[in-house]
Length: 567
Image 1: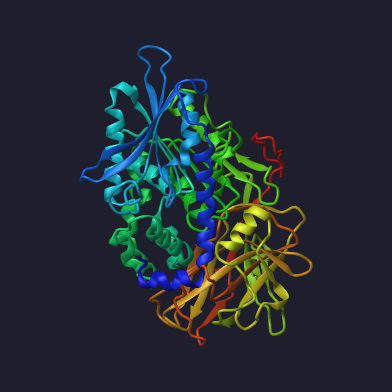
Image 2 (image 1 turned 120 degrees about the vertical axis):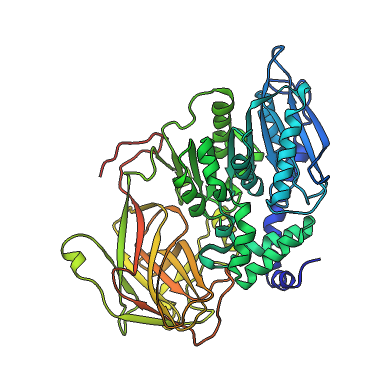
């Protein structure tokens, strides 16, 4: 039974969540049905599959697990260990093919169903203390099976989405973990659900709904969802902090745990800029893969063919290096970004921040009384820096403004799978309820990295929300959404001038036409703080009201090697 707040929200837009999760579940089920049953004679090594094992946790709860056992090549051979945890609302056999292939290569692989998801017992703890106890019990269990020949010095945690976040947490909290691979996961759960104090309505609802549909949700998770809807920052922080690897980052740094991270640029749950920030601040061995796609899409198709999937190919190389002493996995690239528009192209960076990427900062200029849009003026040295803008302009609240972040889930899936972009027709953007600023750009401008906004505003109310849209605008004034974000205040001082710095979604994309940044009050992606038609936000023009974008400067080829900078 769904909690009343969730039931109302789910009834408004039930289809997107059902379609998205049903499609993914169908892929996983197809793999399980079609894959040949592993046998001692299958593949390069013999592999034996043990199904339906029950592992008892500290509180007596039992979790269900499967194990792939490789056949030894010599008498005293020990096998490096890989542990998978299931994704949210998906069974652990999503990793069936990956586990089989790894076992054929000489890995001892265990996949388990986290608590609350049948056939495991207990209630869904959302990476809370009980999940961490379960993880500890699973690792202890597999290392205790001497007949399976586990190597206690070479153990990896690997997972997608929920399983990825648990892998990162486990690496921080359990010294037996040598390396972790987190795909479409999180490092800071509060940012995922409540970034810039904006409640992530769509994905919060999807997680809560699918939890109740397919598992048994703990009341603490329901309470966190209600806190999300209410904008209760204190309650959200108390729930999210112990469930975030970032909270324990010092432990990861102290042990220098090697981390392979993969996130997708259209992921509106575990947003790429959040994990990218964590990556930048981490000083241990690391690699970051940024793919085009929505939540889990770049990684989940690896369950069909591990060798044809870029992310899973990197997973194999990473495990071979850190658990088996294979060749160094970087190939000169610390960061790997897939280009939007031509996904056969990847930009490779030997270091990050990279000398190949420059920051272009633009101040905003007013649109004036009759102008269609305001201007973006590059800041720099000399004469440009001396012409600081001045004045102010205001917009008022409306649910419709002409700026569009897409229909939740559906439009994101259309972008990813059939390349139907999210568009705004800039000629029809409301002057009263929205405002946008434009910069003509040279042909071939490529942005790779995380755009940032510096805001200098005054709101007429103590509660407000501002949504930002970064767009590529062609000569027909058709704006293609390339990034976005929002910022919310639940208890500001009405009428007080406010400065905020926020990040937009990380991107790697060519700008076609010109670059624009637009603002409105409302998007269906978020819970609005205030829907009063009288709500007004005033933009104060100065160098403190600015946009910074990451511009790729280098000439390059696309063969996978890192090139020398040529400006």
